[in-house]
Image 1 (tube, rainbow, N blue to C red):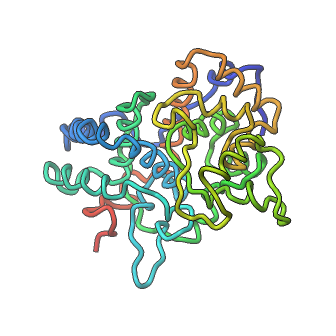
Image 2: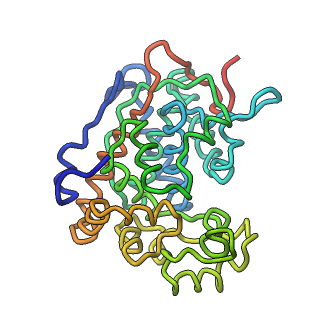
Image 3: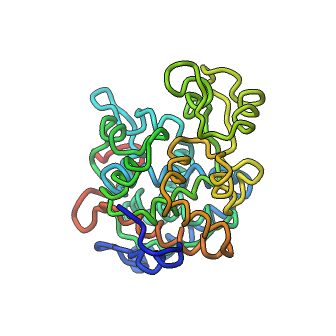
Length: 323
């Protein structure tokens, strides 16, 4: 996979949005207040807990990359099935209670009509908008999946240790291209990460107690001194975009150019000349360029593998498959 064109502006031109059988305003007749109710709930609560926006964004991404955007990440494990929630990449997800509360509000108005998958997609868009980020179109009509499997989550969700080739393959398997990879990675402009997700870069990069040479030395020293003080830290949280982790901006990309991306997968974006050039363009362009590109890629991602029509179900409780 490769970039075509010298700037991010060029390949924004051919980012396409494939909606399958989704459509804008799907619930206009069956539950006309649904989208407004979701927006009202988000606007009421996100200002008091703005970090939830990043949590929902991450949850939506993890949902779409496993069996498509079908709400399978929301399902609880049972005595006979270890669900996606139990997989290592999802053990640090937050916001499940937020989606459950939203589902209850919508169910009271329109029982059995609005899917959990749509609620997650709409709430994510609205939450990012509330904190000052981009707004994107969310065609609706997704139905909820009937399967949630730990093993699939482990194999399908890109790891923070991924190199560029692995990332490109993972995204291509979902119908996303190199431009989408750069733009969607920009979601790391908000939120935090646990030390354990990148501690090898600080303490044991090649298995010999060494530090990742691609990580800025000053930044690494600061992380070890003030944040991840030892290799076994599993609880400390680190801002993914230091100084503006609650602001949706191009700060993440600026950090990448300074070799200060937390994950190996972040640093991987600068190992390819075309990808690095795209990052430079985003940093040098007005914020609207990043916002517009991110919005288009999110709309595209939100249509991955959706279930529509008679596929799946409309879950009554987002955490439990209907009996």
